[in-house]
Every structure is written in C-alpha cells, then in structure tokens.
Image (cartoon, rainbow, N blue to C red; front, side, top):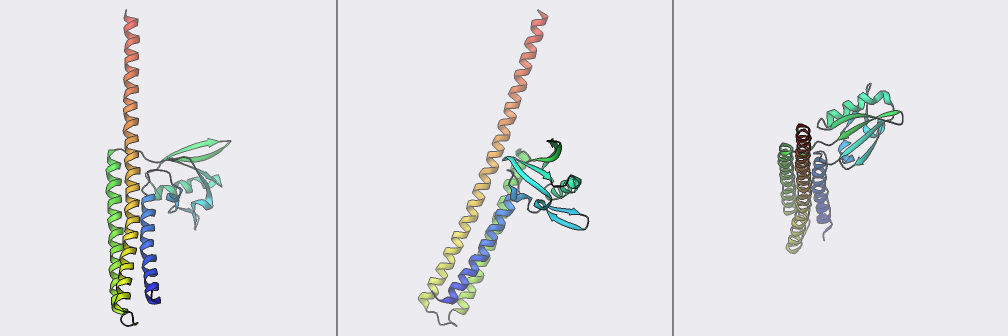
Length: 222
C-alpha cells in the first residue's frame, strides 16, 4: 500500500480510537460499579495547589460497589471529600474509623427505576455522539484520500483498496463502540435487577416480622 495511504489510515485510526476511548471514560464515570478510573476527574485543592486523588489519598475497592479512601494526611480529609463530591455528587459517603485512624467510605448509588432510565438514556446519547464523530472522521479522510491520491500517482485499484481499508477501519471501530454500549447496558440492567431483588427481600422480611409479631400478640391474648 502507498506510504501516503498508510499514513492517512493510521491517522484516521488514531482519531477514531481516541473517540472510542473517550466513550469508555464517559461510561466509567456514569458509575454503577466502583471503578477506580472514575476518580480520575477528581481535583483536590490544598491552598493554591491542585492535586489528583492519588497524590493525597490511598484508594481501595473493598467490593465492586464501594471505594475506601484513606487520606495520607487526615488534615486534608474535608478537602478530599469536597473534591470527590464535585466530581461525583451521587456517591453515598460515610466516615469510618479503623486502627485508630479514619477513612471515607463511598458507596455507588442504587440503580432504582429512575436511575436505570437516566443511565440508559445517557449511554445511548453518548454512543450516538461517538458514532457521529466516527462517521465524520470516515467522511473527512475519504474526501482527503479522493482529493490527494491522484496527485501522488495512486492507481484506481490502489484507491479502491485505500477506501476499503478506511471503511473496514470505521466498521471495526464502530463495533468497539457498540460493544461498549452493550456491556454498559447489561451492567445497568443487572444492577437494576439487584435493586428489585433487594426491595423484594426487604418486603418479605418485613412481612415475616409482622406475621411473627402478630402471632406473639395472639398468643399473649389467649
């Protein structure tokens, strides 16, 4: 393949891959599970300096739905809390103690019906935006190739090969975006089902406690 074509296809691939990576980053920050990457946008302000979360705290995931944030300096605890709140106000926060020190426990919000619908609409919108960007890149490079290939002495067969390579690149990249959407949809749906099951178990527990209490009172009345 002509060197010019190789360079152009490589450039198109980098641009398309960047948008797919951006889609992944955005999905990560529509938090269902506690993914450490979701803390990347957190800025912690200490005086006139701004720090990333890893500069001022150690972060662990005790399970797939929680973060444990241990300030490296407990005097910075409120600044860390503020930084995380500004990036993710939806996180549920609790102050905990361990071994004489304190840490901050964050739990991901439950996916009830409202949050389920919000998240599903949000990821579909981001997916559509990514798809539009990918198509725009494909059109941009197709026009560039058609305009410049004759100038660099590329034959019709080579031109057709270049355009096919561009279309295949677009198809592969779009498929990656589609797969990300499907995975996130599944993650959201599973979290919603978990929420429904927990609510159902809670109702059953309350009903059982009520029946037991009623039985105790009836026995006393007798």
